[in-house]
Length: 208
Image 1: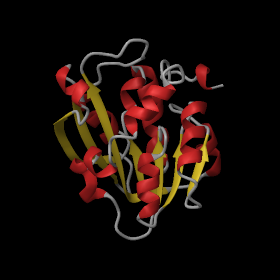
Image 2: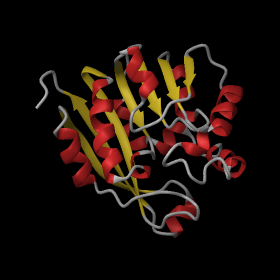
Image 3: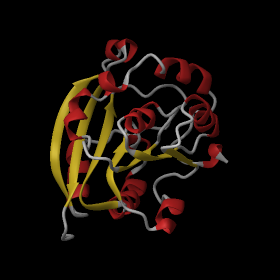
């Protein structure tokens, strides 16, 4: 069940308010710093921690095929209802192992981990990075974001630096392509001093 997935604490309980909150943020506004990295040709995209599918739906609208991974039942069900696109496959799977995806031995052109990585503790992050890297084709791009600031009540988050994440990614054949700091697009978070690291990595052909 979703409540057993480490890192998802607080999401099922607050699903209704989160769904309403996320519906007010557009894909373009949320991801402006990385939009230039989104593939132009039709591609296979993986969205890990897809939430209600706002990003997955935007990718599908661009003509891409998307696997949307979301372990919280309430969010995944809402996403399926709101975005019934034949280009989106919804999957109940989770980091750090992504066991279902790994069993398929499928590789992707672009992988998105938006507001996900900081929910994993250090041991889980070290387990997760090689699993994520294995899902990328050579030359593919991984994009992720790290939240910095006060932890919302009832959530499980860790203070994860861009530097640590870059070092871990580089150790698994991922070359740094982007490292920028941004403010939160949510006004409430900005008032609390929440900032984000937006990182991108490309998959090298040879593993280091």
